[in-house]
Length: 201
Image (cartoon, rainbow, N blue to C red; front, side, top):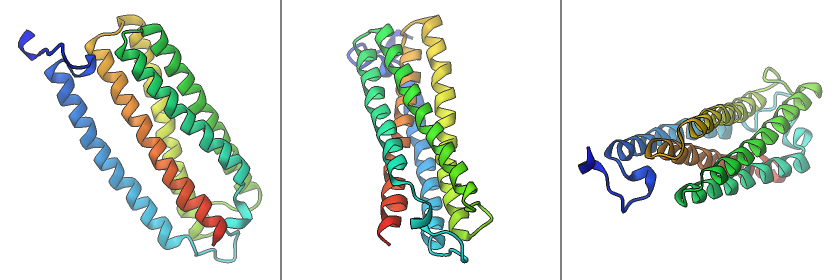
């Protein structure tokens, strides 16, 4: 067992099992990239098919979207601070930054749910047009991933509280950090190719 431990590496990489798990998660993210690439492709094909319903300019609330973007990008920064504190061995600070990250993510979700409610209220539901169907599926899939990430991170925080900062819990924190940063990158593409592009077309 000790032969698989390399104390010169960060805590999350010190065991062979942890290194394999992290590699496996990178492969999983490759599948997630394929999923979102497909959804972006569908949206690109259907984004101009309004069927007489609302267009981009009719529904987009750019101020609210900017706030959502700030919340999620800030959460990526605080997630990075959590990893930084983890590598310094500061469990309490790690948990604090993870909690802040999750609060920012929850704020993002709250605003996204309100955005969907607004769309439906003005007659822009999934059934209205192919454009709106593809929009709801793309945004909803990302939102579902954020929701899953929050639940997952809560479980990791509980393990940190119960078991402390070990190579196993450090690996779990690192993996949830990778997942969270991935969701932020996906949102940057959504913000650019859905919201900003929709405003100028």
